[in-house]
Length: 251
Ligand code: G2H
Image (cartoon, rainbow, N blue to C red; front, side):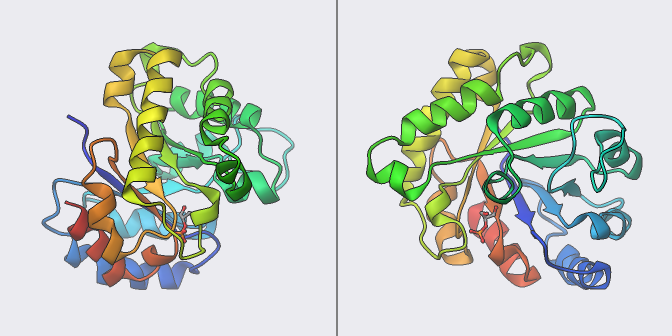
């Protein structure tokens, strides 16, 4: 049985005071929500206040990225040990905006994933095809490549916390959403790849989230499908009421 997971990706929004305003409004709305794992991924400067504000609640805090090394001369980077030290529990890896604007590759995704698992951070690895790749019929090739490199050399013995987010790039922040059928087909393909690359048991327990213009009114139709175990939500997670509605509508 896979516990549904709904994660908020706040991207480069919300200063610490705004993060606190959010948690003040949001926590009472999800106080009785036991069925879903809820994760907020604020920017680095709001991680600390979000962790303090959610302490003792069932809401977890994750980072939007991290370096794979524990420390070193890497100006501007944040390490897994730093995330551990402040109490972050999850981390997004390889979001398409990181791949597009910050040169992240399947190889760096792989190094980050290994590091996150070794540091007991729950990794949410993002994959997904561009519009042209879908239109030319190459969606599965792209997913296969992202996963085979991204998951290369992962020890199945420590891979159980792995979470994958399928985010078709053409649906991110565009208002376009994959139809439930498109999303479920992609998730099914991803699960089959995980079975091949890691093991059938890990494939069966891995949560695969959908991301890309998830809103309160489309959450139910996406999240109720067999292979969809939750959502990674960008724009609609910035408002506490809308994000709480997505969680309620998905369960
Ligand atoms: C995809 C998603 C969250 P949005 O980037 O990761 O954002 O819901 O705004 O499309």
